[in-house]
Amino acid sequence: MKLTPEQRQHFDEHGYLFFPSLFNPQETQNLVAAVPELYSRQETYNVREKGSQAVRTNFAAHMYMMCGNGTKTTALGSMTT
Image 1 (tube, rainbow, N blue to C red):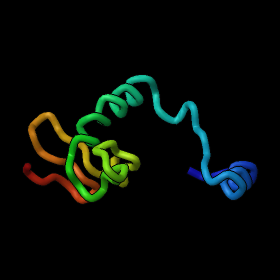
Image 2: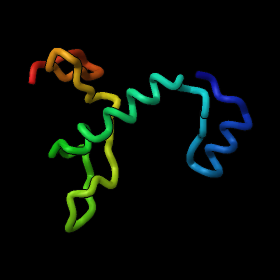
Image 3: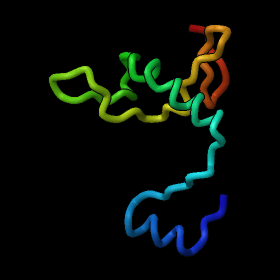
């Protein structure tokens, strides 16, 4: 994806970009459905609030998705659980 000068400026000023049409409704539904399982994991990439199990931040969630066959799919390939 190539950013426009306006998008780059917005990112430089605000630290984020918003792409409301980047994912279709089914993709969005799949991502939202995956969040509870990702947050339930006791992994270092789930940063939790102090004194609580509430997840404050999840790093690299796109790299840790479960497949229907019980394997974890990562950017590096698949590994059994």
